[in-house]
Image (cartoon, rainbow, N blue to C red; front, side):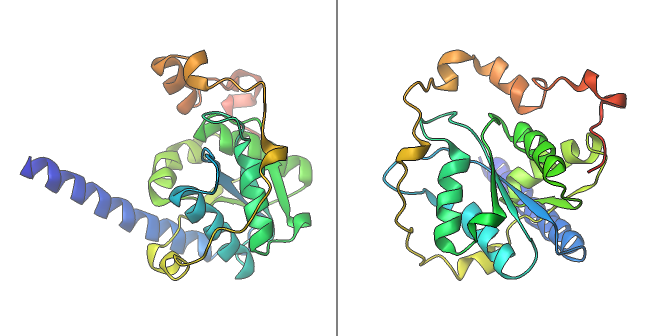
Length: 218
């Protein structure tokens, strides 16, 4: 048990160090035209700690001039609320202007958050892009973002110390009703574990329609 605990602690420490390195690398290239913020399930009446952290971080990056626009990504996957819409409601309430907020409502997995948001960014004419999320998810997506996209996707994982200043921020009041989908079916009822894992690693995306299995530059 002690060795397992030490291993977990070491992995967490390495993840934090890697996150700081990726953040430092990306920060030197700001402002980005757009950042991608992957979704997280919403369970009323308000955001949970993970959604709070991701939305707050997107707001911090926007207000500090590191990002010009935000794409929130995620459909109704594990709850009947479209994740990207809920996050955009919170982002706007925090102070990100509506005209700088965009939503991808198709993604059901973290790799798809990046894939569909990249396609949306290209459609909108953005030229520089980064993923803004928690350090662990950023770490898990690193390999995927390096090999599948014609334009480099940088990473702006949140810095715990910077985010801690905003821990006391109360959840803004939002109306979640427009994001509710009455015909929603939980993905766990549609797909088994291995099918969901296939989606998680990006196997549901038809890469064969792209030359060399890579999306074209923005």
